Length: 136
Image: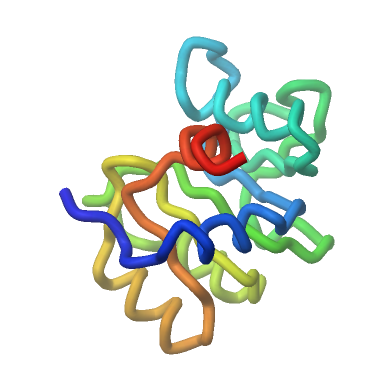
């Protein structure tokens, strides 16, 4: 699967944004949807978990949906299968983040088009942890 066409400098700039909402954050410490945001939190990012099955992850209040969040966000990091309808991405676009980041293995053309039409950058098929470690 190909990834977006952002340069290293552009990804580095994106990773200077620090308020990250994580859609599909997991309670299971062995899943990437847990250890990636944990790493980000330990490296200066402010993490807001979204998972309808729990109230708290990593000591942070967990929201059922992104529309429940009142705070502004810079990056919405998505851990969900590409083949699912982009319902969460539609809600994400309404939050007007600077970036929607689709983790490794995730690319949804419909979500990408909607984001671009709304002036939101979309990074796809990349891991925030791996990119942060590689570039910083």
